[in-house]
Each structure stands twice: as structure tokens, then as C-alpha cells.
Image (cartoon, rainbow, N blue to C red; front, side, top):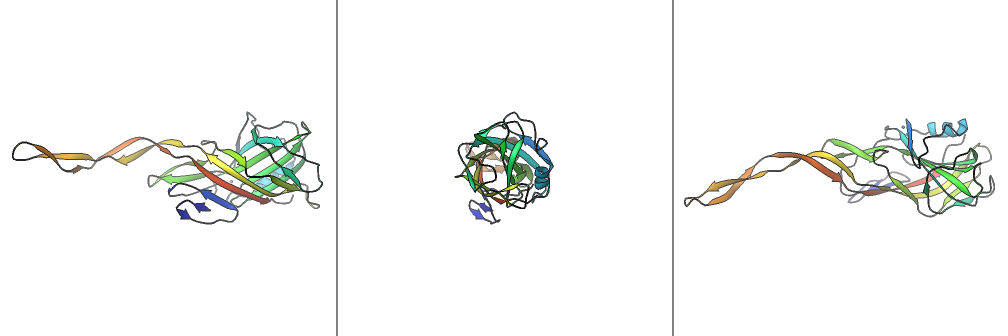
Length: 234
């Protein structure tokens, strides 16, 4: 994990942040995206098994974001590139071939050719929830359906068949997760000036009076890079 101004590394998983104190966390499924209210219940059991076999590293659960994009998918043939702009929402129908990838902290990507389309594929990101500590002790969402991110591909997703698995592999995928700013209520120091009076009756600042205020502040927008390698074989 790499944090701007502070550098920390976790394999395959890089986070770029402002100078915050970052505490991340992440395993329950929920989902958002394109008006489709489903996770993997319309998928064969082996897909759910693939996802459930990979725990989120920090234990806060999962949520799903569903996109679709164009690709030259030829079933279980040679490695295939999935590219183009990710469009929010699923395609409907049922998967005819599926490829699974895994990120370093337990994030998953599922690429599926669907029965409802011959030229597009469905791309589901099953992300681990993460939170951060602000203002000393207060926890707020960082990656969460409460702070819905958007995802872009950095290049193509490479998918390939696996002879001994019911799912293919996402051999490589590089994504940027854009995280919006997040308003929250916080306490902060707002000391008042203390005024004294001189011999001639003139006022001057002679110190401060400690005071704590509460108000709305905003965690700034940020970005996270998540890279994927082949997921579990089912």
C-alpha cells in the first residue's frame, strides 16, 4: 500500500492518499451499480464459492459495483483483452463464461460473457470496505457504498481459460478507483482571543481562551489503484 507522503507497501495493492492517518478495513456482501439489485445470486454456485473463499483482509465486508463494457470474447479460447469504458449497470441474463481475478487485500473482479449480449461483457468488482480514522479517533468510510466510488480501467483486462477450473482467470487487470469527498461532523479547536486593557483604556490581545467547536468538514476526494491477478480455481 503506498500512501502519499507516507509509503507503505502491500503486494498488488496501492493506495494514493492525501496526508491522512489511514486505517483500512474489509468480508458480507452488498452491492450498488446501475439500478441492478443483485450480487451473485444469478450466477452458478461456483462463482459465489470463488468469492466466499477469499476473505477481506481487514474484516469490514464486501460490496459489489457492476459495470459492462465491450470486448472480443471468444469463450474459452486464447487470452482475450477486455477494454473500453466501463458503463454502470449489468447486462442481465446468465453468464456463459466467467473469469475471476483477485486483488492483494481480497478485492475481486468477475468478468462474464452474458447470454443477453454477443458484443459486451459484464464486469463486477467485489470490493472490500475500508474506513479511515479522522480527527484523531473518528472513523469514516473510505471505500464503501456509503461513499460510492467510480472505477476506470488502466489499459485492458486480460482473461484466459484454465483447463482444470470451472472459471477462467483474470490474468491481469489494472484499475483506478476514484473516491469522492465525504462530509462529516467533527470537533475542532476554535480558540477565542483574550483581550486586555492598557493604562489608557486601549484593548489589546493578551492571550487566547480555549474553545472547542463542532461543524461540518469534508474528507477530500482521493484515488486508489487496485491491481488484480488470477483468482481462486473452482
